[in-house]
Length: 218
Image (cartoon, rainbow, N blue to C red; front, side, top):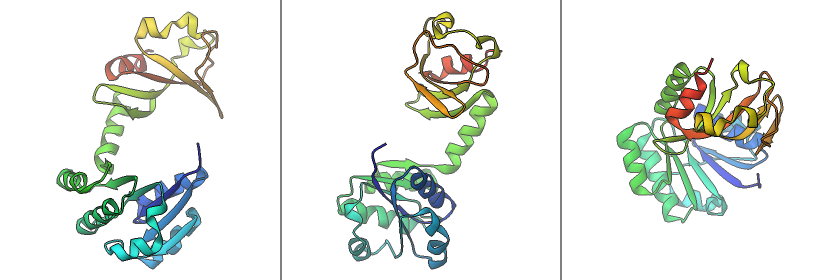
């Protein structure tokens, strides 16, 4: 992944979680919060840290936020501050604005004032828990649309020792294998002659229904 510059505004649990993952991936991360204590606690997971009020456009300008590739607005329970911050960022011409929403109506306002991607942490976590209860072998997923997902699924034990060609996933299950995760290694675009091993995870793309069917194979 090419190195990019991110700003995370709001260093509560959600904001720090995002910042930490980006920082661990070698990205440059600037963290901003109005609370000095939060900034100090999060410094370990940040390239730079600033105490500032992002509802003031002048503060955003003085920090140089417009020079960053992406801004994540992760402000906690202050809906007004969240909306004002997104509004200022949009006016500044930020390329990509991601905003955490506290609910449906908040999300609708954030979208109208310029957020490119709205995140609903509680809803998304609820869906993830439900999906894993319904498909226990499904570990992670990316929602592509209302119909299609990319999912990471533990292989059924009966597939161990067989090649992708033998299993013929595309023809039999109407899903496509785009990678195999094996211990610490990832095999991208695996060969049809690649044999699966116990404990392998298959990264599959397909419709939600077909992926659920595959995930429930004994």
